[in-house]
Image 1 (cartoon, rainbow, N blue to C red):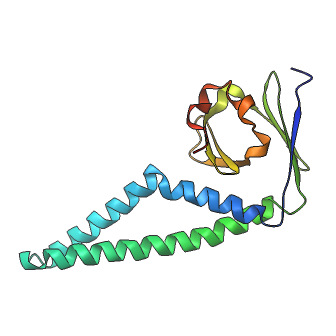
Image 2: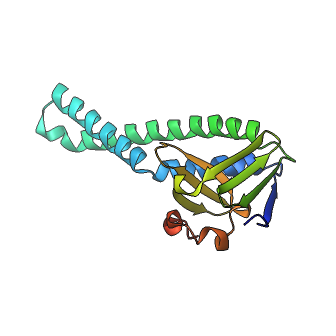
Image 3: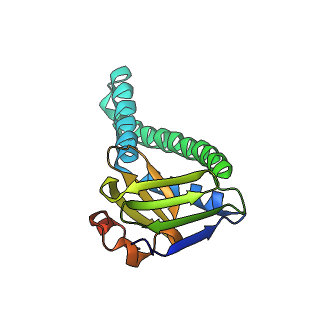
Length: 168
């Protein structure tokens, strides 16, 4: 595979914002986020009932708990959007060129910061989200957002981690 093709992607002025939005969409859908929201709602309702156990107030308590968790979740999403857009802006500056190659050793990603080789066995999951692919490595709690142009479908189809990557 020494003659493996090189795939190239160049960051556009809005690439950082689009990557951050893709990352946040995945975070909002994650099991961890849903579990957090449900636990916050249950905790809020439990505290409300502990402070005022009147059965006639169950309906308002559930409604207030739902509203409070929705506002809290919305605030977290807005802060996260600002934070992640800022982080991605530092990484995906307009004009940045990133290349990828599928070598014998693994997936090779290169940019002006250097070259990183991800052994194929280290790829735990790959999920498409439009023009981005979310790559999770074995043992990592987070995902990396990689332009789909660097990870063509015909190259990824060889890997077991690709089972979840098919575009929607």
